[in-house]
Amino acid sequence: MQYRIGTAIGRVALLLAAATGAGAALAQATPDMGKLTATGGVSQVEGAGGGGLTPWALIGGYGSRDSWGANAHYTRVSTQDYSLDSYGVAVGLFDRVELSLATQDFRGSLAPLNDLRIKQDIVGVKVKLIGDAVYDQDRVLPQIAVGVMAKRNKGVGGLGALGVTKVTQLGAKDDSGIDYYVAATKILLDQSLLLNGTVRATKANQMGLLGFGGDKGDSYQAKLEVSAAYMISRKLVAGLEYRMKPRNVGVDDEKAYYDAFIAWFPSKHVSVTAAYAVLGDITVFNPTRQRGAYLSVQTGF
Amino acid sequence: MTMNLKSLSAIALLALAAVGPARAVDDSIYRGLGGREGINNIVATMIKLVLADPRINETFVDSDMKRIEIRLGEQFCVLSGGPCVYNGDEMREVHGGLKVTNAQFNALAEDLQIAMERNNVPSYVQNKLIAKLAPMQRAIVTR
Image (tube, rainbow over all chains, first blue to last red; front, top):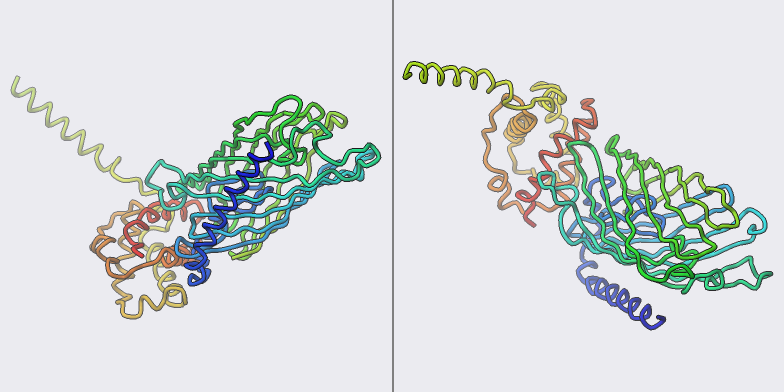
């Protein structure tokens, strides 16, 4: 198991190296900010370009196919009893490849989990395969990309009194794992709509914050994530997202995530996304449906 | 019998003639842009923006801007379903040797969007016109 994840991370590293190999060409290409406003999406909660919860087929950043772009994001979701911070960076190369690094920092605020703290790191690679969401207005084919997210849970804090320091002690089979996904994004300019469907093969419990696999299941499951957004103006997009998730751990009565968002792009250097997110109940010990405000700021070029 | 056939075809022709113009072209985008006058205003604003746009203005240094303005107006009119004729050449021929980049194509699209904004074209109408223009990227961007 450990070895297999090792090789998969090795594969990600190879992809990173290949992308760095493109660095020579990159050094000559100055960032051109050549894409249209909002067409790199925003940073989703695991660091990839997409909506708020779901990776899309769009490549992050504003570099055109001759250039590159990059951005950094900070996102906070606050529900009744928990908070989740996500921060990270992403680079878009030639409007073809997206590399992302993100850290998630999950905290509890309600006793006895008021000292709970779980962090995980996520390395993402996404490659656009076919189609163009913006230009193919005369074709049915969406823009299609494949991606991986390699995740490493860094352990559980705040439960030391119970002797719990690792997610494997909460029922997860593993503290690291890899998600594989295919995303299809179609922008229907004639209807001012953006539609996205993503299928993710995953073992991650609560995105990996509660580890990977568990007492109730330890095999990859394909989960659907959908987004629909209306382009109110060139700088304002509002939409809905729904993300299905597996349910592998007995103590984690995992539910789908969903949200309603509005994203504002005052310039190509800044975007602000506000949402109302519902994350379901996180543990069987606290069956309150967690919901609250989602706020994300992205800056880049 | 022959008479019947003749009158039938005459009726069919009449019916076609009657149906023809009604279903000819949906001109809702054209009307949304403000008709011919609206399009002329949009193109005039756009040309000003393009000439002031450091991303692309140099590419128009040797161009006959008056001619481009007329052709753009005709093109937007035709694409939006208006009663016009485009008298210019194919997009591929016009841009053949220009080595237009994707960023330049998008810069022009952006100037058009801003021009439409300044002329109070509703966003959903703007997007409908951009939808008609976007696929031209394949013919125009050659670098």
